[in-house]
Amino acid sequence: MLKPLALALAAITASVAAHAAEPARALHCGQLFDARSGKLLDARTVVVRDGKVAEVLPGRASVADAQSVDLSGHTCTPGWTDLHVHMGSQSSPQSYSEGFRLDDTDYAFRSVGYAKKTLLAGFTSVRDLGGEVSPHLRDAINQGLVDGPRIWAAGKSIATTGGHADPTNGYNDALSHLIGPPGPTEGVINSIDDARQAVRQRYKEGSDVIKITATGGVLSYAKSGDAPQFTVDEVKAIVDTAKDYGYRVAAHAHGDEGIRRAVQGGVTSIEHGTYMSPETMSLMKQKGTWYVPTVYAGRFVADKAKVDGYFPELVRPKAARIGALIQDTASRAYKNGVKIAFGTDMGVGPHGDNAREFVYMVEAGIPAAVALQAATIRAAEVLGVDDQGVIEAGKRADIVAVPGNPIEDIGAVLKVDFVMKDGVMYRQPQG
Image 1 (spheres, helix red, strand yellow):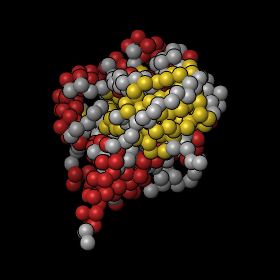
Image 2 (spheres, one colour):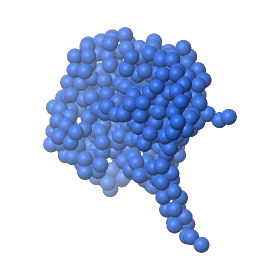
Image 3 (cartoon, one colour):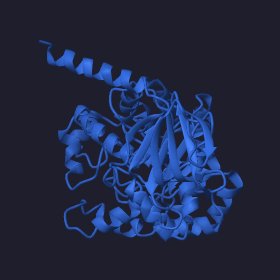
Image 4 (cartoon, helix red, strand yellow):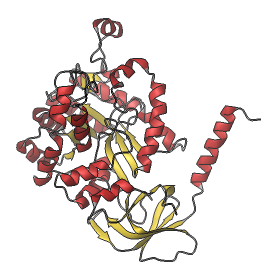
């Protein structure tokens, strides 16, 4: 009789082999969302072979050597990308104490479930912006050991002393003296040299992207949620060093001064952007900086701030004040012509609920087609890849289907019942 470990390895081997031997498929889509034009096309047949889109045919075409998948009552879109998640955690009233009680292994096991929920919700790719678990989860997914989205992992976020991603915020004197002040290895910098070292450490640890916390944050155990926390020169040092390794830089930022410094320093994207001024929006357009609003997170924390005991009292007023503003900022940014891409900050809210961001974007006055582009072709542009985000011959076969017409009713995105990633079907309509 096989021992448990041998059984587990046999199951993993069988899963990898099954995925590698996926048959050709013909997806008969009632409508297809063209991410380049932002328009819905009529019926199309998407032929998938070896994990790629082989061709896109008009109507309901017959493909002799491919298994047919009937999506005639559905709209097919490219797989969605969430550019701001934290796969290793999920907020709760216990989140702050768990950091002292749980090990990395505990967070890793939790992340496996979060990853599958995210994939089944239609998100075939994510950018994980902070968490030591994510590079390992990425590797496990790539190796076929667990099911989940394709991950671009930042690993440990880079902060300044006392900043939003300082891992020792809230520690008492005894713990602080025992551990000592964190430095670039732990992602905390206070100089240009520190900044360079912190990026190189992320490279050593296998990150795919760099995340900085350019201002205070909502959920960190610190008073300010918006004060600037890097100099322009420090941001430039991070960005320039990141370029040496082919990395792009995402900047968490709420306060306008911190946003402006991050944009001047050359970051690729601003996350949250709560207090973004018209002048800073103009600078972003000039520099080509992307904005990832994360309206979902703002709505979630503002709602939970009303619940006694959900957040520590130091955090609660920040959540109530800042969270409620992000949706309006997204509206103003769209009207001002700032480039917008899709992100939720999921991990703040429950994983698998990512698609609700589409609904909030539309509520903010962003057209449904633009919101869908933000999670497909625009997200691919932010990541700097050209093999996904559209349904075209030669691209990755990442395809999501929802019943009905999401352009007319954006709520359809909450009813995903077909998910394909790299040609593998993870979800399909029943009956």
